[in-house]
Length: 527
Ligand SMILES: NC(=O)C1=CN([C@@H]2O[C@H](COP(=O)(O)OP(=O)(O)OC[C@H]3O[C@@H](n4cnc5c(N)ncnc54)[C@H](O)[C@@H]3O)[C@@H](O)[C@H]2O)C=CC1
Ligand SMILES: O=C(O)C(=O)COP(=O)(O)O
Image 1 (cartoon, rainbow, N blue to C red):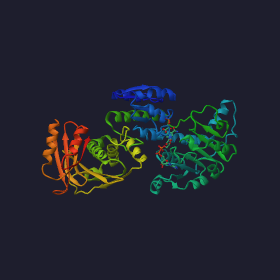
Image 2: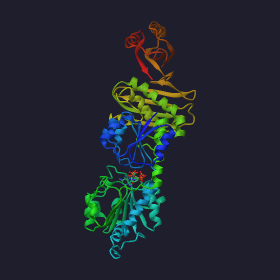
Image 3: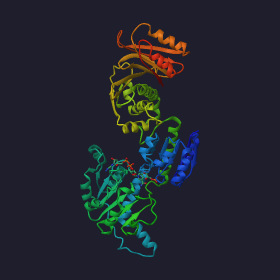
Image 4: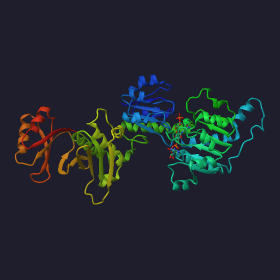
């Protein structure tokens, strides 16, 4: 039975779902790094929110871990590269808390414009300060939205409903999508110069870290109001402090901080024109139930059935898709295994061609399965679909994929070419009887070989008596032959043999086969 650790506070629905699915679950929140490292080795799955840091050390201690599920969106608290290298899937729940977070951004914008927190505190302290808390309207003001993804676009719709003019900056937003959203797409500097209110909804990446720094604030309109309910380090807090203190910015509202939790030691907290919440963007009853259900279902589906949903480091495979895809994943991995064992060293490039029906399937998932097969025999690490692309990239192995969807294809085929420093090897495979993986060509020579079990591969001369010599030698050694398939380029030309054996040959026997007359090379392939 797989075991999951819930390491951050989340709705009890998550525990219920794990129980219903037959997964052992433990809830241990607030663990420090050391305590987490000490126990993480017992779990196949880890469910978190933003508090738990899943860094390289935690992952190194996580010997059984297969999946990290983030009940929420941002995964900047997970070392994705380290997870990928270790073959651990990282998934999030991209839709469960978007409305809640968009509403929070709007709430912060209104609260900052009308100084609601400050006025509340003043009144609670016995003051009635009507003139001190005169605010500004949102109506007909320009809102600049940076990042127009799931949350940003919800914020746009809500701001438009409030009568704001919305302009947006997002380098990945198309003009067509901008028109759909009813926003004017502008460059960052234009947005800074024109916006009365600004709200950020990007992930924290190298490009967005310190996106708001001294020079950014200098380009903003005097009296502008900044809202950040995305990630703390997108805003340089020292520079924000100066921009607020000098009065260049009218106000700022932050839900997120570069270092969380904040314990009263942040200078921003002293400023009157600064308001904040302790990372509450996703904290509503509705959103927390949504993300807890989603994360528990996604982790369970992966651990129990290999279904990949919303993974940030692996192409997603839907449950209904998996049925059709699974036999091809198997075929792809086995083609990779054959080539990986035959290729030797100096692998530079993998070229994959999908033809026929298979070209219409999820080829991204198939490509990772093929890579997994190729690298499995070459590398000491445990290879899976998650770490295969990372390890290939680290080794400078190029990957090219092509599709041929022609309707006249008799059967779906996958052709994999490995280009080495010296020479190349090509394997072509297909499915027979609906789901059996079969090799149909190797290095341009037609052959028909089921891709399963222990295979003796022989490169030979096409000459009489060869089958008898090989059969005799194997028979004398007590090796039973299950299947024997021959292929040749042309009579007396290059030829090969595939022999399915009931047990692998010893090194000594393999050498004897290799030195038989007519045999050029012999290898054991294990599938
Ligand atoms: N305060 C909170 O509790 C919450 C915070 N968040 C944060 O909000 C972020 C955004 O969430 P979603 O909208 O769901 O993500 P999303 O992936 O749907 O949208 C992100 C958008 O940012 C854009 N983007 C990426 N790099 C950019 C750059 N350099 N400049 C401008 N735009 C850029 C992308 O093109 C995309 O359109 C999350 O990554 C997370 O960090 C999410 C949920 C709750
Ligand atoms: O979903 C996100 O990205 C969030 O920032 C929400 O964070 P939380 O789950 O409330 O710690």
